[in-house]
Every structure is written in structure tokens, then in C-alpha cells.
Image (cartoon, rainbow, N blue to C red; front, side, top):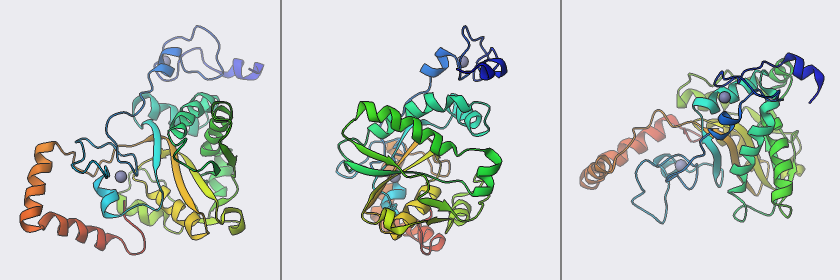
Length: 289
Ligand SMILES: [Zn+2]
Ligand SMILES: [Zn+2]
């Protein structure tokens, strides 16, 4: 660690406030590092969203959103939920205060990516979701790229045969998009529609792409970026993020609610047509989730 970081960093954990016994390049205490909960429990096989009730169709354990409007990526994985310490650490990383934490967070991203080992292609381009150049200039770095760099250095050791190549200038953000925070799903979709372009189509044609970002919220950004890569000729797109938010707009189902809805749907198709109508009315060329 360089002398400058020692001098500048506080002596307290920036997540829980407890005093740090040693100077550390990332001001997060050892306890906090172990308390980033990994995702577990039943999850959508496509987007990774938590399924709060086991899927009735075990052959296709997909969430409602993915069943109604399949995303343009094969599978999205994440390390943990975007809450508590994870939320604080990502916020700190983005706004630079915790930039040295990229290493520890990158290790977590590597664990998320490792879930795809054996399933995803043996050779992939790793594409961090880009910032617009104005945002990049203001922040000084792209957190998605920092996380990807750290994750790849871990994976090169843990999975030496997996050919993952960083391609951070392949995808570009065409316009500065408003911050996604506080937007509805529909607003997010409109916000990122047409936001990306591929600088050199030849670089992605027939290539398998692993799109990397810090957070997966509604999936609007991942869908838009994946669609752009697909249209540029990518053979397949996969997504890995450090954290994912729980979908706020979806009712959480217990099995009784699900059963009741299934009965209603069977008797009148009311639920299915309402949901399909909602998807139709809110999506033209792109799914709305
Ligand atoms: Zn702590
Ligand atoms: Zn899903």
C-alpha cells in the first residue's frame, strides 16, 4: 500500500464504524468482509431473481418477467443482494471514497462469474457496462471495469482454462442517461433504450460476451446492452453483476397466493391476459422488465 493512501484513509470501518486494528488499503473491517451475504435459495434460471416460492414447473424455473418477456441474454448471475453492507460498499466504490475496495468486491464478482463455469462458453469477451464519457471524466473511472479487472485476475488463477478476455472499449454509451435511481421499470427502459452502441462490429461478431456491471436492478440496462451486442452479431450474451436488487414492483408470492392465481387463471385466463396486456402496452421493440 502506498504511503499516501495510509495517510488519507480513516482508522474506522466505513461500513460499520468499528475501529480498524490495522491500516488497510480498503477501509472495511474483517467482520464486514465476511458479512456480505451471498444469494441463496431458489432463483430464476434466466435472470437470477429470487423466486420466493418454488416454481410449479421445475423443468423451467423462470420468474414471471422472464416467462412473459425472455431477456436477450442467456443467464444473469450476481454475488449478493443490493442491500445493507453491499449497498454501502458499492456506493462508496462509485463515489471513490472506497475505490481500493474494488479488489475485495472484485473477488465477490469472480465468485458470481464462477457460477457460469462449465455452462458458459470456454472463450468469452468480458465487456464492462460503460459510462458515458462525460460521467467517466467526472468520476475518473468506470466501477464496472475496475470490478471486471479484479475479478479476471482471480479467475485466471481459479479457472486457468477459461479464456476470458477484457474488452472494455467494445461497448460505448451514446448519451448520458439520467440516473436510474427512483425511476419506474418503464422509465428505466425508456431511459436506456438506444443508449449503447458497439464501436467495432467485427470485434463481437460470433463472439460470446460476458457483460459485467456493479448492480442489476430491473435488468433494463442489461437488456438494452445485451440487445445492442446481439444486434452487432454477438453469438451469445451472459451477464454477471456484483449485486442485484430485489424487484420492488413485483408482488411477493407465497404458495397459497400462487395457487389462487393459478386457479383464477385457469378458470378465466384473466390473470394471463392482464399480464400480457400490460407487457404489450408497455413494450414496443423492447421488453419492459
Ligand atoms: Zn465493519
Ligand atoms: Zn427471471
